[in-house]
Length: 484
Image (cartoon, rainbow, N blue to C red; front, side):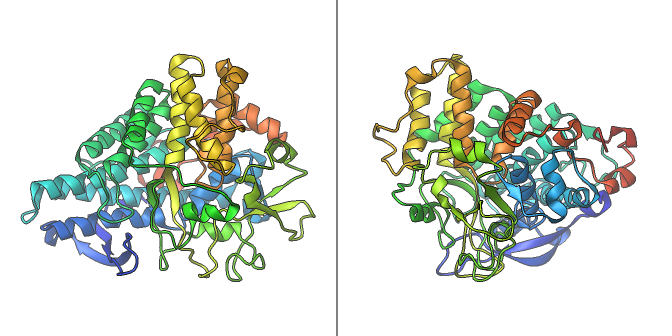
């Protein structure tokens, strides 16, 4: 695999912008390095090549999102080859092969980013401003790729613009990978524009949001709070008002180009749809024009602890509706994401970072810094909570959580974890990220409480692909993650 990944030719992407949708679109093209990277247009095209592997159904488009949503404990699987995931006992051979596909797509994105980072400074017909901007976009995307890999594998070959031609690259520690991620994001924060030129391109606010998440994941709560607060105080984002369940389409609608809540979404469109949506739909539910794999669902009896603890007045819960498809009368599907106009490729975008995420992240980080809940932290939490009940996010409400009821840090953190689970349902496995961020003991406690199942040690890390071990002489077989 590594020998494929390190070839010095981009299987690239060209941007196309239609008159009716000003969003990032891509079409395949092959680009030879020696004849490229001369103009701003070349650099833009090369940066676009980074997006495609991440969009694919073998990455954020389906497999990555699917795997982590199953791990969250919030959903059940209809059956089939994915069913072993619900045993929390690691991966069988079929799912190991799927994980290898995810690995390949991430490293394709990293390879394409490295090519931009290496070659952009040599562009003869591009301004210094353009060179810095496109380099920043590439470094942002490289950091994003490594960030979503490192919690799942624990160590990674750290491939950069300096060593990508090498065939044998050893595993780097988590701390070294995070050092690169943070360095890339700081550069991106300093060199990305304030506003995206096209919906879907990263901005300095996206870099700050990912930095906040990185620090948050690492337990650097003061840094996380600071970066999240910079996004909040920018006044560039606000929560979309919701009064009915259908109003969630203002956030997730298939025809939505952008919104005031969007910080960074993985953009799709008619041609390159978000395939994950099909996992949520049933062919006869009326929400996907006859398509749907009805893979993920919730059962109100089996998952009673999830369902019964969730207030029925919460509009996020009302996104679920009863639908019987052969597994009993208690099954529920969610219509958080749907597309009634297209079949097979939903134009719905993957909401990777929303303003609500940053508010909740800030609330937890601020409480941890103070070692107790604060009025400010509670207000940020309540902003998201009010919106979920159809209230004005900026006005105190009868449904507000009260600081006096959560005077100790532990109860407040559990409250935030619950709210983040409701808010981020089906949004790329964010709940599993939260759980493993809190440590294995906490993850085991939460999953045991909901499912009654114990998590095997091997379940916490994905195995390195067999091709990587075979072709990369700098990684020994005994470095494989435990249990594989």
